[in-house]
Image (cartoon, rainbow, N blue to C red):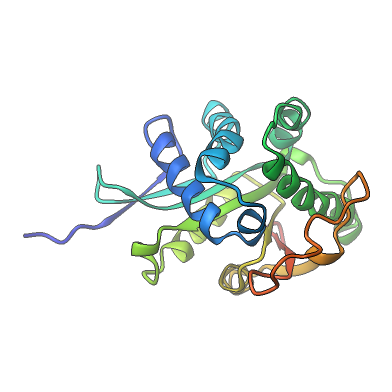
Length: 228
């Protein structure tokens, strides 16, 4: 009997639903901010569905899905899209968020996005079209498929596609040491970080002041320059 092989593909209409749910389940259990505010898988599904649908609608090839077999379960997901699409989605999308926990998590991570967009032209010495800036929102591997190098292959495939499509930079925000190391091994750099305990939202509150630091203590801004 032939061994089952992993199948790598871009996010599309056929794999959107299982990819969405697999990624949301991992995020709810592993992401420190989500764990702290008590985000559920269903809340994360509702919060992120418009992003997945936007990626498919715009035929953005950067997002990766890994199945265990051609029609098997989703083993890993990497959600990446360009900053121009993100900006177009942001205003109406964020206004529609009804989950308090999702709004708190989104607000904290959005602060790193603002830092990045300010730093990028300063670092490169020129303005960059937002359509050529890629953002990695999530990189998730389900527990039963970890330790098999799936995240590494997804990341390499995504970088190759980004370079083929003339992207200038890729950025992500991570609390995961393994994810940070993966990005660094592929040429990424740490530009900044937001310490959870010090983060202050637009209302002047510090929602993570009492966060268990065993979950994680900061979100790190990781950047890969692609047009060197």
